[in-house]
Amino acid sequence: MSKVKVVLSSVVCVVMLLTSFTAFAADQVTINFWHAMSASRMEAVNKIIDGFQAAYPNIKIEPQFTGTYAETLSKAIAAVRTGEAPHIVQVYEVGTQTMLDSGAIVPIFELEKPGEIDWGNIVGPILDYYSVGGKLYSMPFNSSTSMLYYNKDVFEKAGLDPNRPPRTFDEVLEMGKKIVESGAAPHGISFGWPDWQFEQAHAMHAQFFANNDDGRSGRATEVVFNKEFGVKVLAKWTEWAKAGVFYYGGAEYKANDAFLAGQIAMLQQSTSSAESISKAAKFKVGTTFLPRFEGEGYPLGNSVIGGATLWTMKGHTKEEYDAVWEFYKWLARPDVSVQWHKDTGYFPTSVTAVRELMDQGWFSEQPNFLTAFMQILTGVRRVESQGVLLGNFPEIRQYVTTAIEKATSGQMSPQEALDEAAKEANRVLQEYAELYQ
Image (tube, rainbow, N blue to C red; front, side):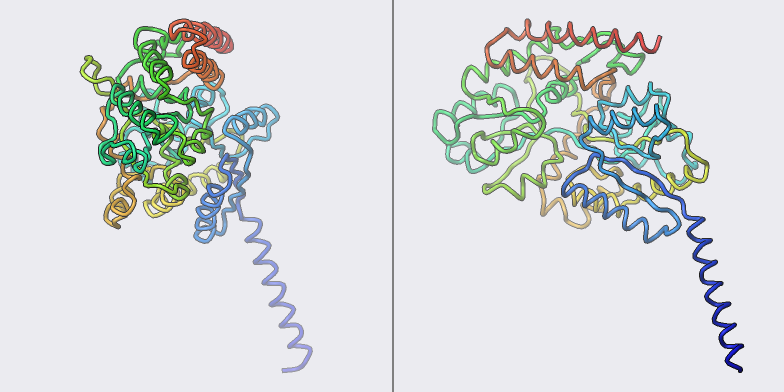
């Protein structure tokens, strides 16, 4: 073969390769994914995306950390107004009503390809929370609930059985007093996300938090958390505070520091903290179900879902939505769900994934991770425990937090504090309703 022919042949090959690459690049679909997962959780998100990219090289998922849950929700709504919304946005559970009313979403029941995800395999309470009228609106992703963590070493020092944590509100007070009086720890108990713990108390006892079935049978227009049950719960917490048992540890995850430092013996906190607490604790950590009122006629409810879910935004092409659906299918895979749980502590979303974890012996090695499942799977699925839907819910939570602070610090009675919070909450709901009349 002549040198000319060799050169021409080489040129043709290069052109073909470049053409092939250009076609591949042109066919690649890019999906923008806004999320609020930072630090190790961001690494876990990236691990999921890396696995997906390897399996689907023609779909590029562009993850972007957009701040806290509240910041991510605000940015997403603002982006819709400017026509620059991402394809997928992670929104915490209290943003559900806002997303439903936004007019900016594509419900997952419109996006799905029937039969490709078995929704009946999704853990029931997760499916319940994000369903309205029997239809699922967003993709389950990082769900959690609340449980009671306790310091087994402190229990032993106080002369308590480290394998017998409190089951009732009265036992929290009784054990807390022994802990404080013995000097085993300065305080008995604190809360992460105090406002959410107040919601959990309602759900655990099957009591409504707002009218219209907690916003499930119609948009909620009034809260009822300042009625008899809510006042009773806050009065009990105030009693703990007066006895020196309750310690106000701050918002969100701030109380974790006090627990890890041994300042408190018990902590009601999200199950998503199971991994970080277990790794950081220099003592034996136990976990159990949330305490309840005992023998007072309240029906058994269930702990309620926290965390966040993935919403699909309007304004994109069919090809892009097909790519989004492929990503959702990837998230629903049991192996992906199992790894997500191990990396973060959030629930695996499917029953199959839970079974795989059990078969692997994961829960035998990590019993504190099992507590959350046992609590939420043994509770009763009912509308009172499905989860509250409120417009501008984050703002309403702030008023509830203030009420808890004022009551437990002695500034106001539980009734006065909750009445004040309810007045502000109802104003928020009225203003929200006016936007959608």
